[in-house]
Amino acid sequence: EIVLTQSPGTLSLSPGERATLSCRASQSVSSSYLAWYQQKSGQAPRLLIYGASNRATGIPDRFSGSGSGTDFTLTISRLEPADFALYYCQQYGSSPPVYTFGQGTKLEIK
Amino acid sequence: QVQLQESGPGLVKPSGTLSLTCAVSGYSISNGYWWSWVRQPPEKGLEWIGEIDHSGSTSYDPSLMSRVTISVDKSKNQFSLNLRSVTAADTATYYCVRNGAYCLEYWGQGTLVTVSS
Image 1 (cartoon, rainbow over the protein chains, first blue to last red):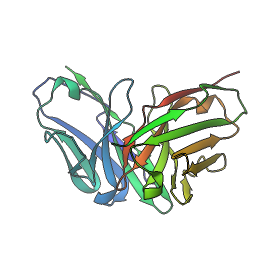
Image 2 (cartoon, chains in turn red, blue):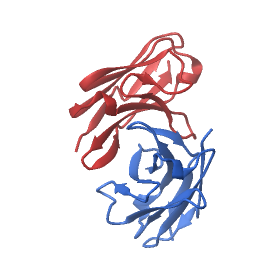
Image 3 (tube, rainbow over the protein chains, first blue to last red):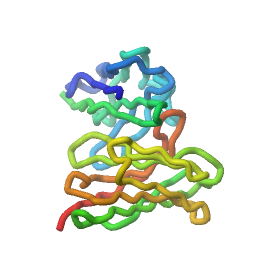
């Protein structure tokens, strides 16, 4: 079973700053199988990035994903007030099919 | 665009069965994709429960496999979750989701189910 570890647990930044969120896998993950989600309080998660670096429909280009193997990164280039939320990474395992999530990173206003 | 809406009892007794339905609009389940259930205990992270496709093929998380059944009703364009022998640890917000390419693309708003006597 692949375990995803996100860091930091909480990230305190100001609007306009750059945010870098990390997701580390316990074993190598295909880039095609790595996704990122944003969850605001009281709302369902929203898909941001799939295939490690592909933005989902309607996601602004200030969100970008990168990485390979065991280390993946979500970058938000210029934080806006609406970006302060919880962020989860997720990997897909094919044998058997299973989706697993990291524990989340809370992005809070400094 | 595709929309998903969960429905079902908000309170289930311990040892009982949690039953939820997801109504899909804006897309016909018969046309494809896999469809998942995901849950989130209060103030905790996300947990994938399982998935189903239009033909009724299923996959389940190994930790829940012995208690879970996911089914599909194409005539009503909906799919359902049954979770047996529930305990307080099954208290969570349950989401239904349309899968994307190795990701979970379209989410319902979620429904809170509490297990309590």
